[in-house]
Amino acid sequence: MDEFAGSASQLVADVDCTAGGKPLCDANGVKGYPTLKWGDPSDLQDYQGGRSLDDLKKFATENLKPLCSVKNIDLCDADKKAEIEKYQSMDTAALEAAVAAEEKKLEEAEEFFKSEVQKLQ
Image (cartoon, rainbow, N blue to C red):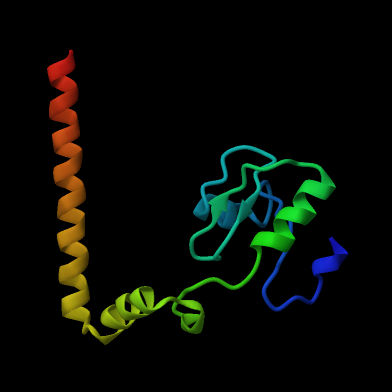
């Protein structure tokens, strides 16, 4: 889509997941073809919209723009900016502890889910 060529914030590209692009596809959860992804390169989302050229152009124009992130903190509201700054100010040990605490919550939620499913059987 030539309309987006050279854009600082919008990239429309294709990747051959059967050749040199396979590692990129694997890293982003591409299982079938064609798969369309969009969003922050570090957190790509599955595209669920229409597949016509008009649908894709409309979606790209409305959604492919800079979003609140570490790189674009000026686009964040005060709450999100404070949250980002909180994590940026933490040392490595504190960040690792925070991640471990959240991972423990996930494990506990998974165990709870499994135990509740067992009750249903």
